[in-house]
Image 1 (cartoon, one colour):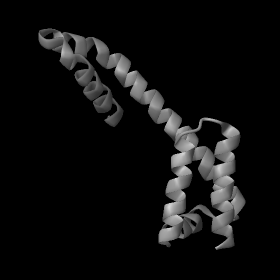
Image 2: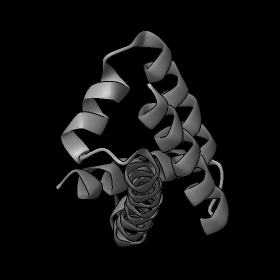
Image 3: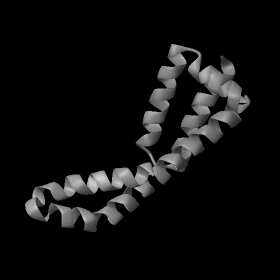
Length: 110
C-alpha cells in the first residue's frame, strides 16, 4: 500500500510542471513510478537481508540476541547506522556480506 502511495506522489511531483495537463500526466506516470518504487523497495530488502544474514552468521547469536546487542548501546546503534548507510550505497554482494560480517563480529565480541 505504501509503495503505491509513494509511486503516486512521485508521479504528481513529476507532473506538476506540466500545468493544466498535470492530472493526465500524473495518471499516465503513476504505474511507472509505482513500479520504480516497488523495485527500490525490493532492492533495499535484498541488501538488508544480505547484511542481516551475514551479521547473524558472523556473530553466532540468535536474531533476538543480535537485535538486543545492536540496540542496547549508543555506539552499536551508530555503527549499525554507518554499516547500513554503506550497504545502501553498494549493490555488490561481496561488500554487503562483508559489511554484515563486520557488524556481526563486533556484536559477537561484545
